[in-house]
Length: 179
Image (cartoon, rainbow, N blue to C red):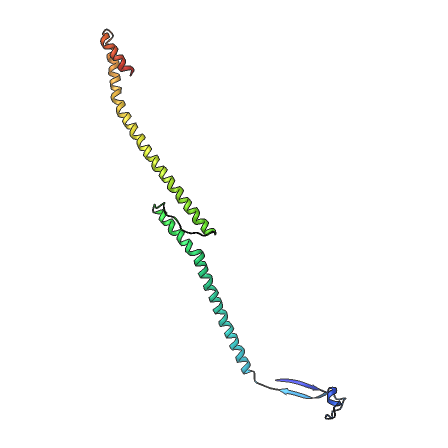
């Protein structure tokens, strides 16, 4: 309900059709009563629509953010993880094919450089192992040759001492001991 007074204005007491006393301040009261049930129902419906729109908007924005993060971050990270698993199995020639210029692209590029350097280091280690094996083989061969030569030297020296009075043997034994 709304109650409003009706004031006596100059147009009310100066006109010919009105017979109001100019000293009277309030001419009457306007009392309006009406039900606000329909207004309340419309307000509630508007609030419900606004909430529904808010939830739909938040869900749509969330889905868009998920799709962007998935495309920009998650897929490249999964590629890098797959590459690390390949390298862990020994495939040092595996390359990540990411042509991005962001941090993930730099990570992929440095990963590729790392695997290239690891491959080179592995090749060098393999070469070093081959050289070490050849060295061990040479040492073994030298040892096997040195043992009989030591025996020959010992017996030649012994014979040289015994051949003091035999010059025909002495010269040959000196060459054997010297060589």
